[in-house]
Image 1 (tube, one colour):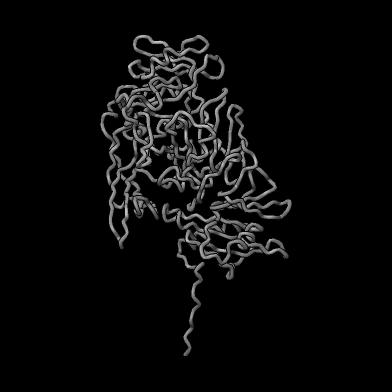
Image 2 (cartoon, rainbow, N blue to C red):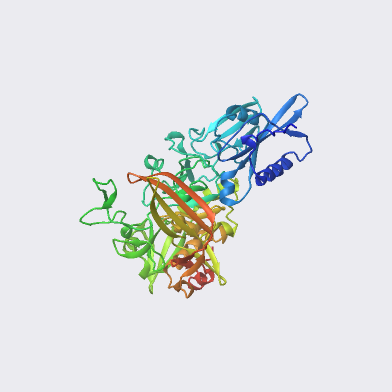
Length: 555
């Protein structure tokens, strides 16, 4: 009796029911019109990042087309969300020609084919490493690699190589067309779904320096009554700006020094920045600055070692113009560190600061840089460039926490952390375990200080939340921020918040000569949830702001 030997499963087809079900769902959607199709059994596409499936269908009786589906295993392992994206038609044919039979395809669809938003005669397939563009006028497909693509226009926002016009005439927008594109890598988990806010830890940033900053955008200072936004890389690119969030987040720098430091010099032995000795002056001179207000706050952990106080510098622009939404802000005199500098400052002979009964009033204020940041977020959101991270959705504001009928904004890192070192097979392995009370893989807007080992971006995060989610005016947003920072602690702020861990992030690396290699980051649901204590936070009480400054919030 002959034994029937079944043929071995192709490597390309070696997947489980979760993947099979996801492919079936994608096929049902693509072929919803009832067009007949069959699975291709010859073409081989293999990737360590996921699984491919190729179907064949009749476009016309004499024109046979392919559709290439991709299941992103890397993203599924991190999120549990089964996603399948496709490219088809002439784009799929070119894709197959360029990638078939490779041992590990690293360029794969991260969105479905669609008409280009900036050219309706073309179709774009957004891939992990490049964009494939079909031009109906030539029937040709071109590949635009993110790592080398140079924009056609210097003054447009670039997303997946598409270029978007900037509608705000008060903003100078400059991308990397006239500069050097920094070294970038690809997003293996798909389109960006998070926005991570940074500060430059400095008061100046021009084009000679900004394109060396590892981020996607930078909100720069105001010059000639116009703000400048720089774009250093396509949002499609993985840029090393946000530690564990690099694969998902768009990084936005904001020119500001949130606190002062002693003047820094380079240690010739280590190459690291150290305090100049003897310590004689500050690096940024925020106590004497007229570029904003330097406030003391007992509620936050940011400390100025020069004056030994907990502080936050809030950048502002000043003018005596009556037009253009300039406004007045108030705060307690005792909390204003740069009072003397602002008191001496004149605009066309007019003082900007007055004091009455311990309360400072600062006139002619405007938050131009903050508003330019908001404009950029709106541009990204309105064009659906950040996947599912909608500012009107409370769930994306990961640093906002609701408890007992109150809202709080975290002003510190949002994780507990342990570090261990071990020797495995002769290799020194460093393992950092981070316990988070939030899901680090879901759509989000948050700050570097929340998820990493820096103390920047808090100020920008709360401004955007108040301005974009609470829909406050620019004036009221700033006045609320100032009140939250400078008021006495509320009863709720006096006791730490205890949150339960939701996600464990494990970062492993090999130590070689003091440097890290083979870095791997894993996101998993908390198996044995830890308790995370939050001690630095602000209670978001907008009614209290109105009670304190009743005549200053009419905008």
